[in-house]
Length: 151
Image 1 (tube, rainbow, N blue to C red):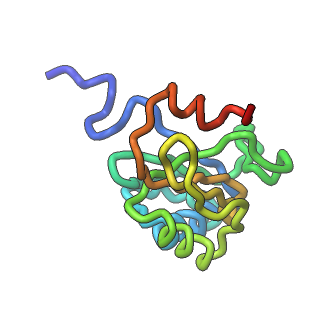
Image 2 (spheres, rainbow, N blue to C red):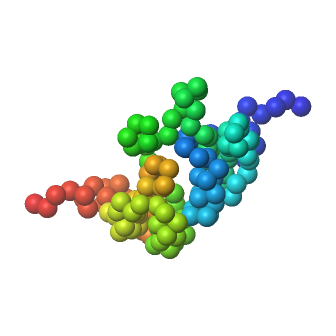
């Protein structure tokens, strides 16, 4: 039987996060974001070379920073231009759990004109997450109206 070019159970796109101290990061994602660790590949010097975790139907890959492979975490660049959006059942509770576990709150959850209640935080490894719960179905036209300046 031929092998599927897309592994079973994997989405077409999976983020790959590079961090310093991948073992600690994996434990943090499990604790703070409710992730399920699904793979761990040990590296040299008691590091975690590669790991994978699931949040719902999403797979996130995680690797240890490695200058030999030109793989660096956000701290190397002074921050990250990439954000991850994580939809959760109850955004306020998820946001509180993540900040209690050490995430830095950038913007608390608030209702947005596009129908989500969303808050932004930075995890202890430098990655930015937008935690959201969808609270209202809003048409594109209505989003544009709501976001237009008065007048």
